[in-house]
Length: 128
Image (cartoon, one colour):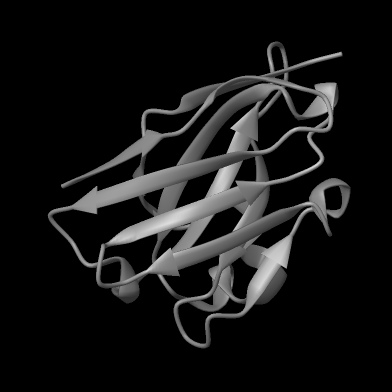
């Protein structure tokens, strides 16, 4: 049972990256899915999530309108499309599967409660 991220790297400000997270050992459509990030010296913070119950999406304010989370159940994969990247988006990005519950409903999924599995993380660096 694991989540494996890919698609990170170095990009110039204003550019785009698409992160992928492939799940194995469980079905992503059974879980709420999220992307979190952690910059050096800072705590891990929710960026985007997609609700298992209704596919509703939720975003942290600083990425709203620039990032898009989606999932492909047939490929057992969750994606994070990141456009108009800024240097402050530089961080290690983690995908996560969250148990669907009242604690992960709606915008609460960004809080990181009831985690079933974390990915190991992937580095995104945005240069000036």
